[in-house]
Length: 175
Image (cartoon, rainbow, N blue to C red; front, side, top):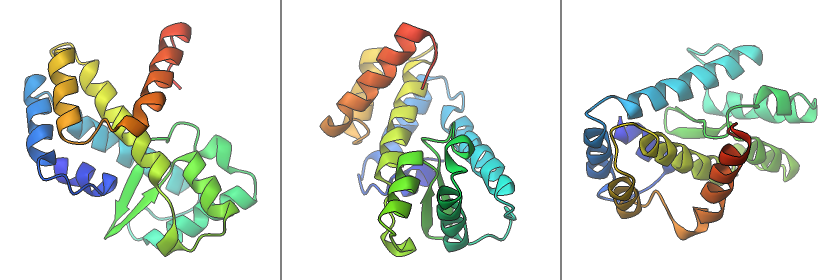
């Protein structure tokens, strides 16, 4: 499972798989990573079906252009309401379902090969961290040490994770 997350994040951190195993072990091997990957697939497939795409044979390029088309039709905000961390892998391609990535790709008229996924990557890193931190069996200090050691908590993401936690704390609602 760690390989899929590593591919989505496009990280070459050599300790990533070992760190993800340590995170999973800290939860009593409860499948946090597996649930996250299942949620990514479920959300991606829901959006793909809404776009009229076949989830079994759509290419990355077709999906990318369908998302760009939804931006141009102004259908995108509701469509991608809860997909900020969804990075879907088709073959060797990673497609971001993050609203900001999709809008920026459309606005800058980026070709598929030049598309950005950085906002989705930041959101996915935050989602991984949050799911492990919120697990009943994990220790916050240990979890944070592991995620820092495998590159899941770069300094550039600190504002994002803090803002997300603040909003959840003050409103009781995430996002």
